[in-house]
Length: 476
Image 1 (cartoon, one colour):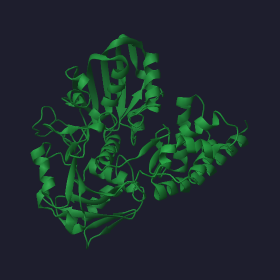
Image 2 (cartoon, helix red, strand yellow):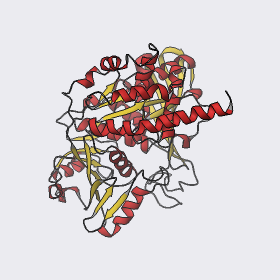
Image 3 (cartoon, helix red, strand yellow):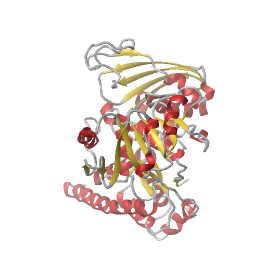
């Protein structure tokens, strides 16, 4: 190909990607249909992000999916009367063009592949959401909810609860507007000082100032039967978190930290079927538990696990000191920006709450390192069955595409991958396949994870489950 032909092909792809954007938005707003390409969501994606998502297909299928192949499939989707669903445009397009030369049979094909979504018994009802605490996770969950506002998403961000006074409202809004790690907010943010509210992309968010959960009356803000997402980590047992349920208008509580006692620790994709209507308090576990548990489940299902050790290389958090100062925790008083800090983690033992078959089989430690975000888990396992690196990687690649864990496990084949490349990843964990070591019954896996954004995506998935939101995953 000549220089001109490469440029022409790129411009054609760009033009088609631009044409896809309003169709993706229309499907979401009108029917609650979320479009992705091999688990890469396209809602609010730029033209370049749409093209890059298509490039990922070659990793799984052996050849690239062209935008010109997926565009007619997407256009045909807009002509169907679909129920709320998560539809993988990449899988649909690959399946269709493997067996057809033109788009004349496209509609019958889609009607067959998407038959469950043509049954309109799947209605999502709106659930009011309150974010109690507005730190790192609270603000990222807010971003995720705002980008999905409208349509039939089912989760409505109604309020945030913080300590302090109303004179800090501009600062709260500024922290939502700008983020040193995750970049600027994608949209417009206004502040209503008189009514103590933030308006983000048309979403009216009441800011409530309170010192304890029980003192709040949410109903005075027309908030009812709300799902309270506690991002503070102050309370982690039923007694403490139960204070939220004493507030008028509150119905259920989700903790964004490991729960104690009998609280169910949920890793979405692994044990979310444990969430029952009678559960009023649930935990979304930790970022590390969410990163390693899906991979451990996949490995355990195929090979069995005798025992193992998980070493977490984790970015520093607000719990540490910027410079040396007193800290009640061992070693954590030393400067986070200057040191690798050896510390403990409960993630390895917490896996057993989601995967009981691994109870007592895993140990774990953590090293905090001077990076602001993205961590890595080094999983060293003794297996029941022998394998090798190629076989293990082939299996995990398949799991990342065609299994119930495809939203949790991503798979990389890049030899140049570094931590900042994973900032903004929506997966619970990313297998670094070129680092995999496996021989006989021993295996070592390296799993990256955005311990902020990837975890927040898992939190939102648990929220949907608690709210009873049905979002079919198609094609099956």
